[in-house]
Length: 208
Ligand code: B1M
Image (cartoon, rainbow, N blue to C red; front, top):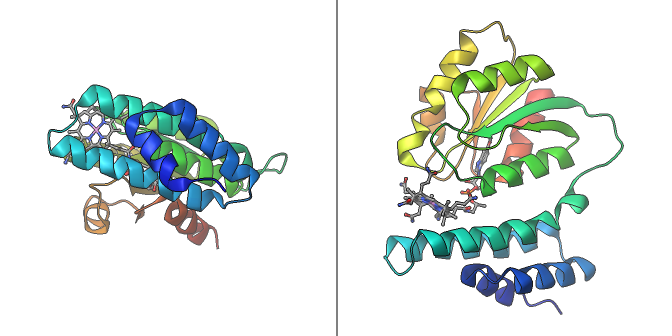
């Protein structure tokens, strides 16, 4: 049976070969994607705690992130519904100044699995780029991710740029570890989700 504790340990250690192998085994055994993701995110939480405690530094965080990304990529074909006409289009990106993308990528993956076409703008995305991309692709959802307390304030610039534009009825959804529901309400966003599954529930609520 796939050892999910060893999966967490491998991601924490930045051992991508082992992380990918165990993820493949778990998928083969029919372990749910959410259970596998939980082991991966637990590892990243541990990496963050060790970084805060000065036990590891940016390079170690990077190799753990790379291991998680490679292992999580194996889950995408399971989560994404193929060949079905999308019910909505979303534009997603990490706010300007911020390079964290693992959580944003998970949200993109889960939205695709919920039959939403997702245009991923990547990281370090300026406010106007969200507006331009939403207009270009006819998106009804804009998703913004931020992992730093210093960059989350830039989410307000995106909300301001969207509200000042000709985009009507576009829902703006925020997420990322430092972001709270209070902050989302305060800057005029339409919603906030604490994890990728909640981000799906949130946008499905907009569509009913
Ligand atoms: Co960074 N980093 N980092 N880092 N890093 C944090 C965020 C930190 C909390 C670590 C710590 O100190 N404990 C800290 C922020 C402190 C703060 O602001 N309060 C921090 C710091 C300080 C920094 C640097 C400044 C370090 C430095 O250079 N001195 C630097 C900043 C670079 C920059 O962005 N300009 C930096 C750099 C990096 C790496 C590049 C090395 C790497 C990122 C690699 C990558 O993403 N490609 C990295 C990593 C890996 C982390 C930690 C360890 C892990 C983040 C992660 O991927 N988590 C992180 C510590 C932590 O989070 N505990 C940390 C797993 C991921 C699945 O969770 O992203 O929270 P998360 O996403 C969740 C939810 O938040 C939510 O759903 C996701 C899935 O459940 N969600 C959304 C996210 N986006 C959403 C959008 C939505 C809805 C939900 O709707 C649109």
